[in-house]
Every structure is written in structure tokens, then in C-alpha cells.
Image (tube, rainbow, N blue to C red; front, side):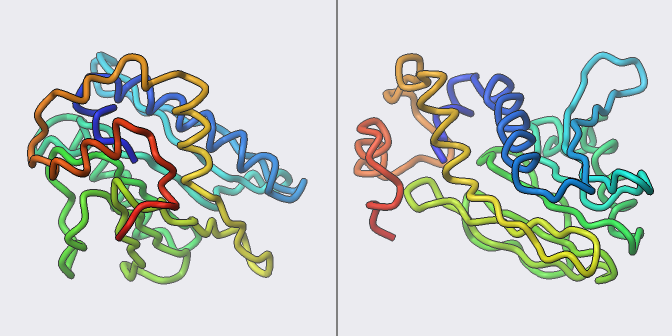
Amino acid sequence: MDPFIEACGWWEDFHSKLIGGLEQTLSALVPDRYFVGIGQRYDVEETFRETFIEIRQVHERSLVTVIESLSPSNKRYGSEGWRLYARKRQACFEDDTVSLVELDLLRGGQRHPMKDPWPPSPYYVLLRRQGHGHNCRVWPAHSLRPLPRVPIPLSKPDPDIEVDLQTVVDAIFARCRYASVLDYSRSLKPPLEPGEVERLSGHKPAAGASP
């Protein structure tokens, strides 16, 4: 994950393309009895809109899995975006029929509280399966390592499908030519090591990066 997308003000553009890319990827993978759609969440005054992905069973129209990619407003403690997402998140945790996949590809902001410590990594992927209460699995994610392959739960007895998150992100990065608009001289908080900036600006494949 390239942190300069966030630092250079291209996150909103990237986020919308990530949601679209995940929707297309999932639609090609799920069995025909499932529908993959893009949902929208508004604040009270409809001054901002957030999108997320829902997987539903076609005939029962029942919600199976929610996939959220956090936005800066979701990580701004006390903001309307924080409160809206906290309510949505809690509702998913309390619904034993719904799974939640949460992608945090932002270095900035504050993470929502969990009982156990978050991994010491700039990014993470969280999975809370239906019927598992508040128990979650978390994968750490980094700028110079491949992003995790994410299992997406379906309804039992159907097995999970797996999304190669790195492939989705790489395709967006290449197609949208972010390399031509990102300023790799910009300072980041927290800062990167000099070698990390050089490797990011050179766009070397994540799979070839050292841990």
C-alpha cells in the first residue's frame, strides 16, 4: 500500500475505485445465488457520503457479509463519521447472522477500540465472522509487503472466497497512473525510512520487498 496516496490528497479518489474494484472482483467470484452490491451511508445532514460493499443471498435477500474500507472521517475521533461507523460496526458485531470485513489502509487517524491491542503495523485487515460474537481475526499490513489475501465468508455451508487485495490495489494504481501525481518528497507522519521512500517511488513489486 502506497502511503503517499493518503498524504497527497488522493485518498477519496482511491477509496471509490477500491470499492468498485472489490465489487467487481467479488461479483466474479461468488456463486450465482449471491448478489454483491455497493451500499451508501450518509450523515444526518447528508453533507458527506461513504460507500461500502454488501454481499446478500439473492432469494432470501438476507445480508451475509459487509466489507468496509475505512475513510479518514471514520478514524477522526468524535466526528460524525466516527459515530456513524461506530454504530454500524457495533450492529455488525451484535448480529450473529452477518460477517464484517474491515480494511484500514490509512496511516492517519485513530483506530476504533478493541479489547486486545491492535498490531503494530500501519494498516490491518479485520474479520469478524457471523456467529463469533466479538471475536475477530486481524492481519497486519505494511507498505512494502504484499497486502493480505482476505477470506470473505459466505453463508454456511458455502466455503469462504478469497480476495487477493494486493492484486486489486496494484491494478488500480497502474490503471489510474497515481505515480504521475504523487509527490514523494512530501514528509509523512510518522516518517518513513529513507530507503522506504526510495522503494515506493520506484514502484518495485511488493512481493520483492524485504520484510
